[in-house]
Amino acid sequence: MSNQEHEKVYRESNSEEAFRTANKGDVVDESKDLEEKKEQVAVDTWDSTGHVKVPTYFPVEGEDGEEEALHHVKDAKEISDVIRQARVDEDGDRQW
Image 1 (cartoon, rainbow, N blue to C red):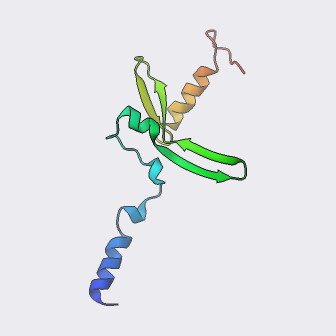
Image 2: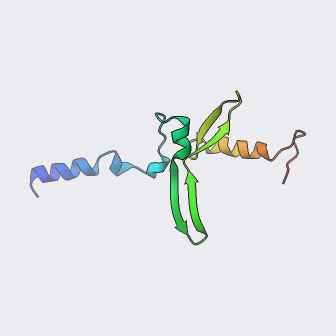
Image 3: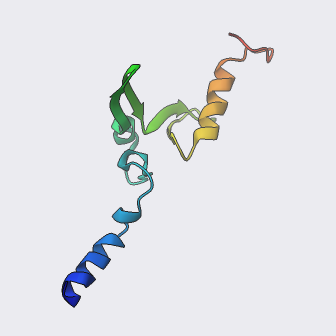
């Protein structure tokens, strides 16, 4: 392998893409508007239980009443809190 070929392989293997640890659908993209975020899918596959489709962002109503998109990885704790709140009545009792 020539020095130029070695250099090219080195650059490609050390690119940002080569070090990506997340699926492309997991990447947070703040440049997208709310509607684009609602359409982004992190996982779309089949497994032994059937079709698995995971959205990248979950649309929720924020405290100010505005709809916002929570990222399924970055905002996982907040998504869990939203789900927990949805299961609690006005007296704070869990509803199953």
